[in-house]
Length: 461
Image (tube, rainbow, N blue to C red; front, side):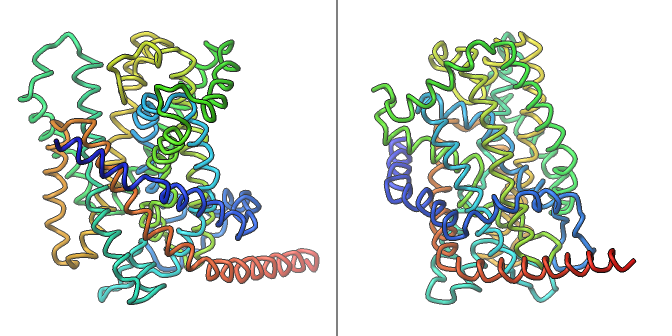
């Protein structure tokens, strides 16, 4: 009965209005901004190198660490397990709609994260807080306060770590040690949940800076090694790649009846794409709002790289490996990370299983760390800074429960919560888009002025 209710909830949230809001909103940002993040993509990568950092500005993190913290929330099981679930539910055609969502998400992230820095909130202790709830509160004012509250409540639901912990438990129990029967027991699941909660607690008690330090070290390493593994798997099956791309484009517009028609495939692709790169959802706004900068456009440009790295590169790797190895057609009853595991095992044998297990272990943990920060920000917004300490204990309890929860129910619940978060994020982004355009004009006008001064100085010397 619970699963039926959650299915109805997800169907309601991810209906046609949500497709129009995310896809139409992304198209609006892209055209209204005249492709700003695409035109200045070189400048975005320069910002990551620290070339424009001067050590001043509000916030806690460098541009690179802010992006790493944001990516640690997206470069995880959304890329490994979420893509597999999308393929199981929507077939190869879902990948096309994930790509489209990512391309539009570049502009969406630019606008929403620029606004996140523009409308940051500073508390009585001088600490900086950001996120869609503060964008709504400080940018739109009292008439829209209900949107800020909606985001915070939906965030508390969407940032539970249960999906990541559940899939991590599945890797240990059914993939690495399938022959050990006692590992599949409820008692082991509870014990594993408690052990994982201890590890998570060691990091989150250090706050955002410790989360960002861990993420900036582990995320690039794991993403890079995962990319290498995927490319090698594709090279081993190179002759199948053209047929796979053909099936992706054909199924996007003419899917098999088993996948429920074109609209169902679009909904699956867009919703899973949003779950993967979080463009328009608002989660990434909270991480990028912590950047140590007083130039909102700079952080917006850095944030715009997220969907490119996350979905167009990493998610595509996962989807293509699953499709070229053919495990999707032989995966009856297999879902999530188990399907991705089967694909890499098909390519590399047992070695592939263990290598991917290491990826899942680390990426799932980094996602869990970042989700704590997101949930903490929502909790503090609703209940105040003094109550924030209690959220750590609540979060660790959810880690334990994640080890014994049903993957279907947890994943659907998260997808539904993500849809609710998108409403305040996209509505505030669209209404405040003119403010971003004004900031873009000011910023690049000043950048050109500084560049001209530097060139004049060099010529004089």
